[in-house]
Image (tube, rainbow, N blue to C red; front, top):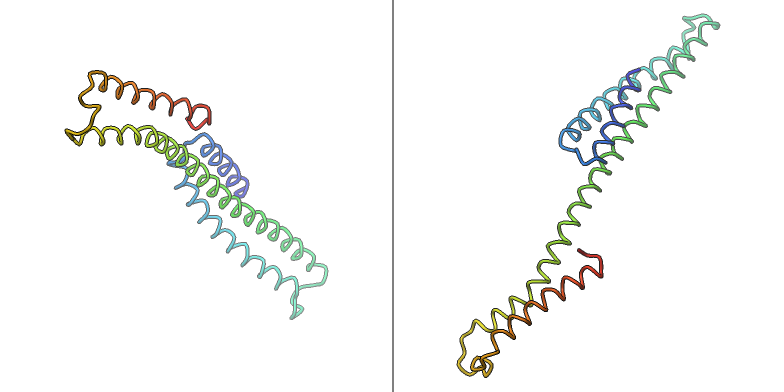
Length: 169
Protein backbone atom coordinates (compact mmCIF):
# COMPACT_ATOMS: atom_id res chain seq x y z
CA UNK A 1 0.00 0.00 0.00
CA UNK A 2 2.80 2.43 0.89
CA UNK A 3 4.71 1.62 -2.27
CA UNK A 4 1.58 2.23 -4.36
CA UNK A 5 1.11 5.63 -2.73
CA UNK A 6 4.66 6.59 -3.65
CA UNK A 7 4.01 5.44 -7.21
CA UNK A 8 0.94 7.69 -7.43
CA UNK A 9 2.89 10.64 -6.00
CA UNK A 10 5.71 10.11 -8.49
CA UNK A 11 3.25 9.99 -11.39
CA UNK A 12 1.73 13.28 -10.22
CA UNK A 13 5.17 14.90 -9.91
CA UNK A 14 6.06 13.70 -13.40
CA UNK A 15 2.87 15.28 -14.77
CA UNK A 16 3.69 18.52 -12.91
CA UNK A 17 7.11 18.60 -14.56
CA UNK A 18 5.63 18.01 -17.99
CA UNK A 19 3.13 20.81 -17.29
CA UNK A 20 6.07 23.03 -16.20
CA UNK A 21 4.95 23.29 -12.56
CA UNK A 22 8.21 22.17 -10.98
CA UNK A 23 8.82 24.50 -8.05
CA UNK A 24 7.15 22.52 -5.26
CA UNK A 25 7.49 19.18 -7.03
CA UNK A 26 11.28 18.99 -6.88
CA UNK A 27 11.31 19.42 -3.09
CA UNK A 28 8.64 16.72 -2.77
CA UNK A 29 10.64 14.47 -5.12
CA UNK A 30 13.73 14.84 -2.93
CA UNK A 31 11.68 13.96 0.15
CA UNK A 32 10.18 10.90 -1.55
CA UNK A 33 13.60 9.76 -2.70
CA UNK A 34 14.90 9.99 0.86
CA UNK A 35 11.89 8.09 2.23
CA UNK A 36 12.28 5.39 -0.42
CA UNK A 37 15.94 5.00 0.49
CA UNK A 38 14.97 4.51 4.15
CA UNK A 39 12.22 2.08 3.18
CA UNK A 40 14.62 0.10 1.01
CA UNK A 41 17.04 -0.19 3.92
CA UNK A 42 14.25 -1.52 6.15
CA UNK A 43 13.25 -4.06 3.53
CA UNK A 44 16.89 -5.14 3.18
CA UNK A 45 17.03 -5.77 6.92
CA UNK A 46 13.77 -7.72 6.77
CA UNK A 47 15.21 -9.78 3.91
CA UNK A 48 18.21 -10.70 6.01
CA UNK A 49 16.02 -11.59 8.97
CA UNK A 50 13.57 -13.71 6.98
CA UNK A 51 16.43 -15.48 5.21
CA UNK A 52 18.06 -16.32 8.54
CA UNK A 53 14.76 -17.63 9.89
CA UNK A 54 14.15 -19.65 6.72
CA UNK A 55 17.57 -21.30 6.94
CA UNK A 56 16.79 -22.49 10.49
CA UNK A 57 20.38 -23.47 11.23
CA UNK A 58 19.69 -24.37 14.86
CA UNK A 59 16.55 -26.26 13.90
CA UNK A 60 14.52 -24.09 16.23
CA UNK A 61 11.47 -24.22 13.96
CA UNK A 62 9.74 -27.24 12.52
CA UNK A 63 10.29 -28.03 8.84
CA UNK A 64 6.70 -27.36 7.87
CA UNK A 65 6.99 -23.81 9.36
CA UNK A 66 10.02 -22.98 7.25
CA UNK A 67 7.83 -22.46 4.19
CA UNK A 68 6.12 -19.53 5.96
CA UNK A 69 9.48 -17.84 6.35
CA UNK A 70 10.10 -18.47 2.67
CA UNK A 71 6.78 -16.76 1.84
CA UNK A 72 7.75 -13.79 4.02
CA UNK A 73 11.12 -13.67 2.30
CA UNK A 74 9.50 -13.65 -1.16
CA UNK A 75 7.02 -10.89 -0.24
CA UNK A 76 9.69 -8.71 1.32
CA UNK A 77 11.88 -9.34 -1.73
CA UNK A 78 9.03 -8.12 -3.96
CA UNK A 79 8.58 -4.99 -1.84
CA UNK A 80 12.32 -4.37 -1.88
CA UNK A 81 12.41 -4.69 -5.67
CA UNK A 82 9.42 -2.37 -6.06
CA UNK A 83 11.04 0.20 -3.79
CA UNK A 84 14.27 0.00 -5.80
CA UNK A 85 12.29 0.47 -8.98
CA UNK A 86 10.59 3.56 -7.55
CA UNK A 87 13.96 4.95 -6.47
CA UNK A 88 15.16 4.53 -10.05
CA UNK A 89 11.98 6.25 -11.21
CA UNK A 90 12.81 9.26 -9.02
CA UNK A 91 16.17 9.55 -10.80
CA UNK A 92 14.39 9.43 -14.16
CA UNK A 93 11.97 12.14 -13.05
CA UNK A 94 14.87 14.29 -11.89
CA UNK A 95 16.51 13.81 -15.31
CA UNK A 96 13.22 14.76 -16.98
CA UNK A 97 13.13 17.96 -14.94
CA UNK A 98 16.70 18.77 -15.94
CA UNK A 99 15.81 18.16 -19.59
CA UNK A 100 12.87 20.58 -19.28
CA UNK A 101 15.18 23.21 -17.76
CA UNK A 102 17.71 22.67 -20.57
CA UNK A 103 14.97 23.15 -23.18
CA UNK A 104 13.92 26.45 -21.59
CA UNK A 105 17.52 27.65 -21.46
CA UNK A 106 18.04 26.71 -25.11
CA UNK A 107 14.99 28.77 -26.11
CA UNK A 108 16.27 31.76 -24.17
CA UNK A 109 19.76 31.42 -25.67
CA UNK A 110 18.26 31.21 -29.18
CA UNK A 111 16.34 34.44 -28.64
CA UNK A 112 19.41 36.19 -27.24
CA UNK A 113 21.52 35.00 -30.17
CA UNK A 114 18.95 36.24 -32.68
CA UNK A 115 18.68 39.64 -30.99
CA UNK A 116 22.46 39.95 -30.88
CA UNK A 117 22.76 38.95 -34.53
CA UNK A 118 20.19 41.55 -35.57
CA UNK A 119 21.73 44.43 -33.65
CA UNK A 120 25.40 43.65 -34.31
CA UNK A 121 25.48 45.13 -37.86
CA UNK A 122 23.43 48.10 -36.68
CA UNK A 123 25.94 48.69 -33.88
CA UNK A 124 28.74 48.60 -36.46
CA UNK A 125 27.02 51.25 -38.58
CA UNK A 126 26.36 53.40 -35.51
CA UNK A 127 29.99 53.11 -34.43
CA UNK A 128 31.25 53.90 -37.93
CA UNK A 129 29.19 57.04 -38.34
CA UNK A 130 29.59 58.09 -34.74
CA UNK A 131 33.32 58.79 -35.20
CA UNK A 132 32.73 62.36 -36.49
CA UNK A 133 35.43 62.33 -39.17
CA UNK A 134 35.47 65.29 -41.50
CA UNK A 135 36.96 63.30 -44.38
CA UNK A 136 34.02 60.94 -44.87
CA UNK A 137 32.65 61.90 -48.31
CA UNK A 138 29.13 60.65 -47.57
CA UNK A 139 28.78 63.18 -44.74
CA UNK A 140 28.59 66.01 -47.30
CA UNK A 141 25.82 64.33 -49.33
CA UNK A 142 22.25 65.37 -48.48
CA UNK A 143 20.88 61.84 -49.10
CA UNK A 144 23.54 60.02 -47.05
CA UNK A 145 21.55 60.12 -43.81
CA UNK A 146 18.35 58.66 -45.37
CA UNK A 147 20.45 56.00 -47.14
CA UNK A 148 22.04 54.92 -43.82
CA UNK A 149 18.59 54.79 -42.21
CA UNK A 150 17.22 52.74 -45.12
CA UNK A 151 20.25 50.43 -45.00
CA UNK A 152 19.75 49.90 -41.24
CA UNK A 153 16.04 49.11 -41.72
CA UNK A 154 16.87 46.70 -44.57
CA UNK A 155 19.46 44.93 -42.40
CA UNK A 156 16.97 44.66 -39.54
CA UNK A 157 14.18 43.20 -41.67
CA UNK A 158 16.63 41.08 -43.66
CA UNK A 159 17.84 39.46 -40.45
CA UNK A 160 14.27 38.92 -39.26
CA UNK A 161 13.31 37.24 -42.55
CA UNK A 162 16.46 35.11 -42.49
CA UNK A 163 15.76 33.92 -38.95
CA UNK A 164 12.11 33.22 -39.78
CA UNK A 165 13.15 31.13 -42.80
CA UNK A 166 15.65 29.19 -40.65
CA UNK A 167 12.90 28.84 -38.00
CA UNK A 168 15.13 30.28 -35.31
CA UNK A 169 12.55 32.86 -34.38
